[in-house]
Image 1 (cartoon, rainbow, N blue to C red):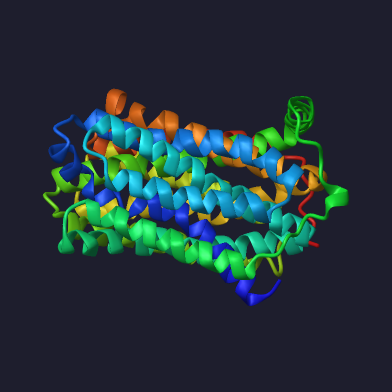
Image 2: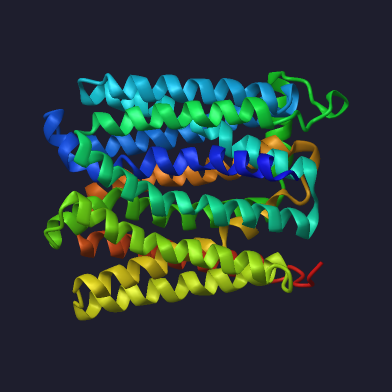
Length: 394
């Protein structure tokens, strides 16, 4: 794969994290500006995740039928329009609808990126490409909150969506010039309800795929709990300013980037399933740390940041390996398979964001308790369902 294509794929994949993370430091201020409650503001995150979930279900079959390039251009154009709609929002209801559209459009990037990689590679090579994309793409959650914090020094939350519209335009330009069509017409499927449902049914009958997708969803879900709850818990419990919060957020996500980089290097020697098993053990250890912290009441800022970093970073050894393993047996339905993996992430994320606020509370104890439960569930389901998977490196 050419370097310009890989750079463009990374840019496309960064749109999802950026549309989440640059927005987070402004959540408390947005609540005041729109004269609403924290629960309603949380629904803007939920709306974005639901948009991503529904978008991935639709974009997957579309890309398998129409190819990768045209749907990508349409999705990126919609991303720009949605960012402008968010910029013009004057009520929380308007913002919720606009955030849904923004999530829907960013879903196209996830599906098409992963389908493009599956079109171009197989086996361990695809796992390394997914890991390379994840490693570089994970810079976005590190950089995005810092960018968001600095943008808020220039103005209010509107500046964030001006930035997202400009970013979307830059990525669209790169895609137009660098992204060729990777799916020949001879390999495309028909775009009908019957073929779409048949493709979903075929992939979902693969129990191994479903286990991988569910495990990935739970790992991603605990990150969504962190994303939804951290601005309130860290800013309120430790009296951090929005700018100070962005540095705490970046500290947490730096470890995720580091472990993604380590995963990419280790895939040269170890199989994806071996690295995934380690990642799931890592998730279990992180859940145990958060549980112990809550039981003994060790709520200093350093202790909390360490626990959050350990938890969030578990995705570094899980996500890319899960994706490579899940896509392995579904080359003919790469778009559908990528969309279903993304759907599992988004639907779990959409469910846990309001649950965090309503059932657990937007404070350190509530956020970390919910994160630990999701980490334990991911580790148990993943390790149990994949216990017979071969660990031979390719």
